[in-house]
Length: 291
Image 1: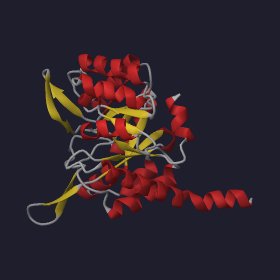
Image 2 (image 1 turned 135 degrees about the vertical axis):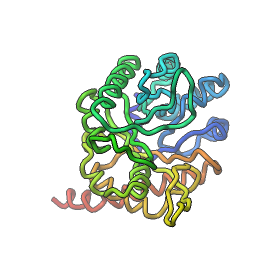
Image 3 (image 1 turned 90 degrees about the horizontal axis):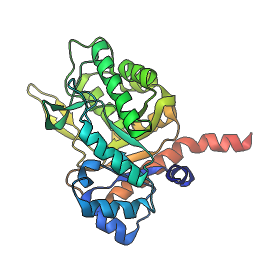
Image 4 (image 1 turned 180 degrees about the vertical axis):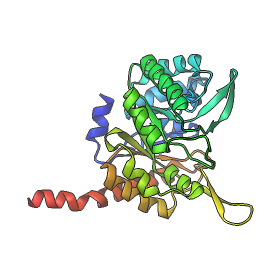
């Protein structure tokens, strides 16, 4: 039912629903196509969970976990996954997603999304964990490409090759974070257009856009940090249009997690994403009608 509502919406862009805006959304029912939540923000907060159930009755909701840790060599956090499953059963989200990263070690949560070497051994481990997550949830899991600041000499595959093989092995789908590709390409020096050209388009279920912060590097230059604390940079909007041309129109999520502004500011970013999407596909629609 929720999935049908997303397809029926005239726009495809949603916004990240963070704790400061929960009561506002319940009270005002803003004009938003859909919301994404982090389960970690509501699982330990019964009042927030009650508000979320109220919101999910009227809006499609996506669940985006930051704590399952599919990249941890010691295994995923199974108790946390069980809590996520309980929330998923409660609100029936349109998507459930997480990161290609690791964030736990020896039973400790590290509060970060840490990078992986792209090797056959890593692929074996991550594939087994994605299979386990999908079996536990009873639905497909979307895996998000990371924001990257370092590469590994041990890597024997590119990130795109790794993600493509992960899709082939597990049947998972991908959450393509367009801003992460732009940021990582800048930081690591790869071709961002080649990256989206090589991703399996049929596997892309959702897109993300978020703000980043430039910081100076020693010796000159700058590194882009994925802070989710500002408006989306102008060059990313241009790159987003190219991603849409490659993948077709996709539900797009605006992320804003730090220095969170009023909800209307984030909704305005979602409206801009809708405008970019409409602009990208309007010529094709006119041509189809003329034919």
